[in-house]
Length: 128
Image (cartoon, rainbow, N blue to C red; front, side):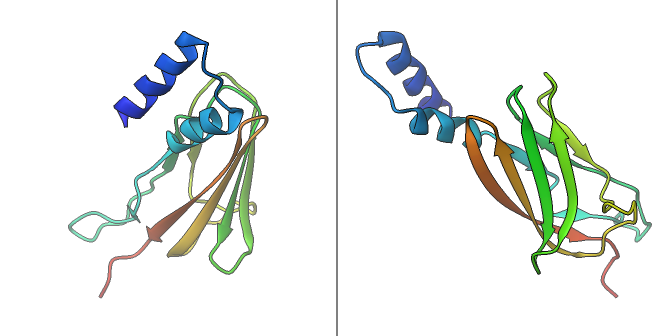
């Protein structure tokens, strides 16, 4: 991954080669990370933990993050306009209720950059 970005930086530095904005944007979007994924809401001993999911490597720009259940229902929406490059989700929906186990889609839309969708798995209770 580092080589790809070093190569892009080299091309930009040379300035005799024109790079489309799409290539630069996709490199920025590829750096976005969601962790932990999968998320386990319990310890090895089966104790429940209150955790968070962190979305990192966001660019300091207007960013909209929408989290959907796999069924397409909007679970949570964030709008970030700060210099911070992380966003922390407390695993609660818009009504401040803890979400259930399942597959969720995180849709990240960064103004003037592009969008990315990341799939995550959340396991709130240990299997029996």
